[in-house]
Image (cartoon, rainbow, N blue to C red):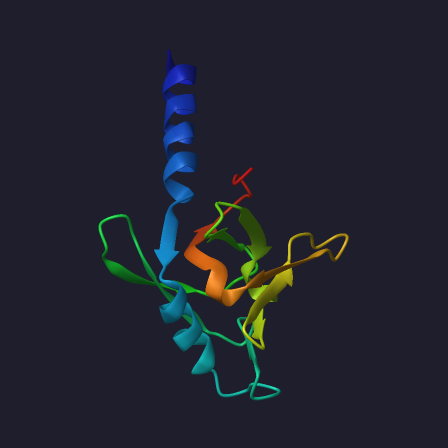
Length: 128
């Protein structure tokens, strides 16, 4: 009986620790443009961002500290979804770019004007 209770508590902890937040695309771009250590005027990097203002399912704003554990999912107007590691994301000439694989260094590119929704999640990759 104790084993079931421990497993249930562990399951609840795991499910609650993977909370997904959203960021409106224009709000995300504004947050990146406020970072002072940008290399060029046309490149905005998420790596230099200390904190990210995100919104929960009820619309309440919360601050999420930037870390390598944050994963980002972008939904485009055509319904296609792209996953990124948040600390590799940057905007260059109105295109969102970032790594989808740390091991292989594979990059995703999404035209920023095609983005309808940005979701971020801290934890393991469970998007696909």
